Image (cartoon, rainbow, N blue to C red; front, side, top):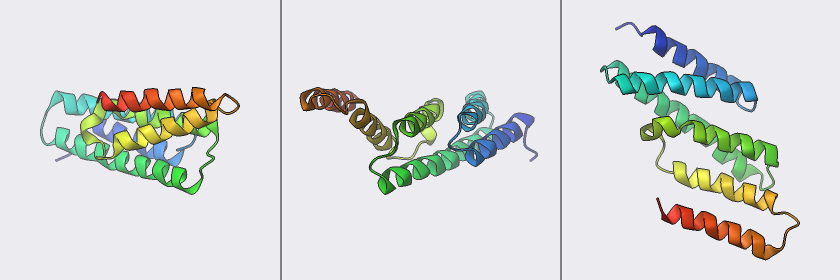
Length: 141
């Protein structure tokens, strides 16, 4: 079966996103590619919808793995980089079914790291309150 133009465009966008992973352009291409996949999945035309779901899962696994590795390698990832990573994991929300099982855990880890940066220089109590709010949100899932 030949792939539709939309699926081909999704592949191109996602490949470009992966190649420029740390840039704003990479994030824009990720959104674009995932939007194409979401449209294909939403249309529900098998087997292309299944291919789109598999493609979304594949890229989600790769992106999440790169972010997870980066966080594990450096406890002091700079704030702008963390913000970029948070935007990247949020980009996958429309194709949530394709996310790895630990996707929410990684999203929480990125937010915790951001809280650590945002609350530098603030009283420890303020940071503790923010972390408690995050924990409470996690409990509402």
